[in-house]
Amino acid sequence: MKILSVVVPCYNEEEAIPFFYAEMEKTMGVFEERFPDVSFELLFIDDGSTDRTLEVIKELRGKDARVHYVSFSRNFGKEAGIYAGLSHAGGDYVVLMDADLQDPPSLLPDMYAAVTEEGYDSAATRRVTRKGEPPIRSLFARCFYKLINRMSKTEIVDGARDYRIMTRRMVDSIVEMSEYNRFTKGIYGWVGFRTKWIAYENVERVAGETKWSFWKLLIYSIEGITAFSTAPLRLASFVGFFFTILAFIMIVFIVVRKLVSGDPTPGWPSMVCIIVFIGGIQLFCIGILGEYLSKTYLETKKRPIYIAKEEE
Image 1 (cartoon, one colour):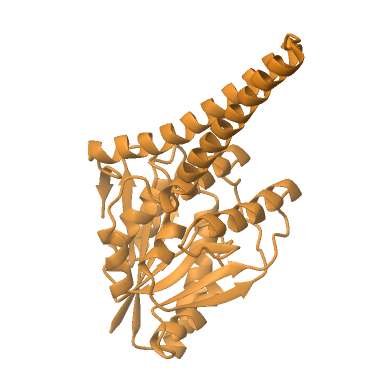
Image 2 (cartoon, helix red, strand yellow):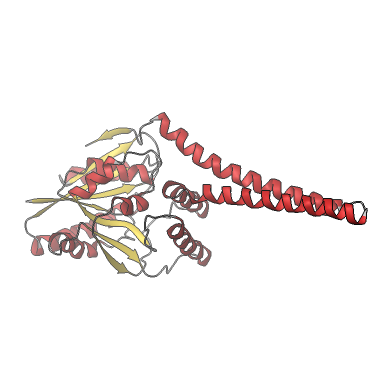
């Protein structure tokens, strides 16, 4: 029997988990008919939930031996949940998916066939529509993917979800990357392997509310850019070089003008505006340096990515 581990990071998903489990039971029934040599392991990662998420998982564990869980001591974030799930999953193949059913379990049989029958190392999903999302959020998401693919050598597919199935070899490669500042979408591309992309239309949450606000997504996008590109550092260098040359040209211009016309240099208000503008550019560049320095600082601390309070 081949084991298929389904990793499900959860944070305050007490309403969604029963719907998810019901859908997974249907999918596991399809597997029994189509792939009778496959057994399942459902691994829930409770990311320090403050509602009854852990209690609901334990109830499922009591009636289904295929259900396992890891509960964090506090909220460490989805990236930590993904890493913990991949680390604990013991299957020959590992699936990563959300509990809110925005990752349709009905796609799983075809995804499994892609890695077992078609020779792929991974089968991943991408949304071709963003129906139900605020327009401004969709706009910024598209801009982010265009920007990071221009700045980074690691390809990150537009609309890519965390929902994917991977071979044990690929999972082990990801787990070996034990960096503290994690951006899993970039890590998938960095480790490589042959991936089949499966497109589907966006599905809204079955229950509960999204935990990703616009601000959290913005911070997450900055994490992704700084994790897989040094282009912002080069940008800061180019900006500094440009303003140095510009300042030198302006100094020569002012000196020549003074020698030729003898007039004092007018326009102190415009000069103040220029000084403030250049000062802002300098602070912006220092901020870029600080962002990379903070990542280095956190990595050197060697803190654990997560702390498990209990598991079964």
